[in-house]
Length: 141
Image 1 (cartoon, rainbow, N blue to C red):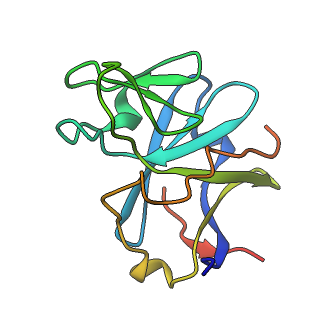
Image 2: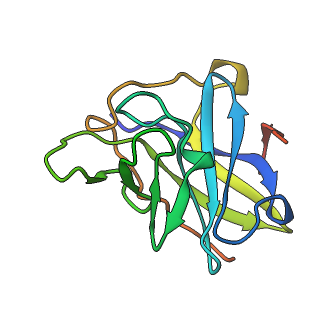
């Protein structure tokens, strides 16, 4: 059975400086959105190690380093790049930009009901698809 998704307005492009991340709250999910210079990517904002805020981490290439214990998370896939022995991940979200607004493709629920899932290994993580280069939580067409 496939899950239906919809595009949710998240944040203005101008609010996410190049090579930095920003956190947005949509429903029960806290999502980190990163500006990689040529595109935007989005992952859950909680490191699977000790819950560190990934949006506050240092971006290096297509990875972010958790500010608490230096775990490295791949921003394309949500997988842990360091330590290499770790088999966990965070959920990555499809991203698009329309008229300067970053939108996320999220499961079909009202923004207040969007659940936070605990196992991204069981989910279909879209690996931060991107289209072009404050929380809104509004439904986009």
